[in-house]
Length: 221
Image 1 (cartoon, helix red, strand yellow):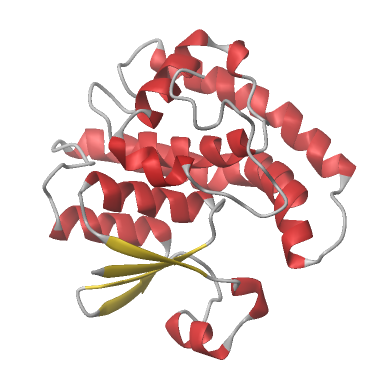
Image 2 (image 1 turned 60 degrees about the vertical axis):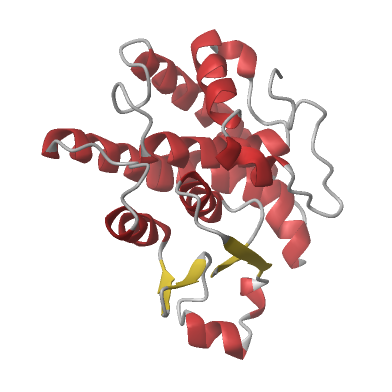
């Protein structure tokens, strides 16, 4: 069995969890308070970041590298297209969400509202929260634009790009920071992806002191 050291609302951990679940790889989840920089954890990943996956006798870090490894070693239920140009588009969008979206939205909303309190780092910075609330509108519009041209974010098939986007949005949805009324197209896409069996454990997450809204685990919103 694989072991994943994770934090429930981390979109990077969620992306790996979705990939593992979609490929039906059994995995034990262990919550890791990475900010405490425990010696055992630092031995697993000196960068002191999650996720960290133990699988096949290896200990791996960096979510995108982990997902690419899973794709190569466990190709059943592929999350990457066959054509190089299509694979590029998946990687571009994964980078978009894990870099630009994370910096502009997730870090300003989830990290400010939840992580600071959990880590004992004080109260949310209102300027950052305001910036995140403004930025997510642009990103939702970009998602809508993509989905008006394609069945899924990167093309006609569901890929790792969809899981990367859904990982971030699900973390934000847990704290009611996604306006699903902004785009029916985006809402329908998210309803479709969160209805997948791979999403079940994520929808069951609970963070002490932060109960999710009633619609969070509702497949029909």
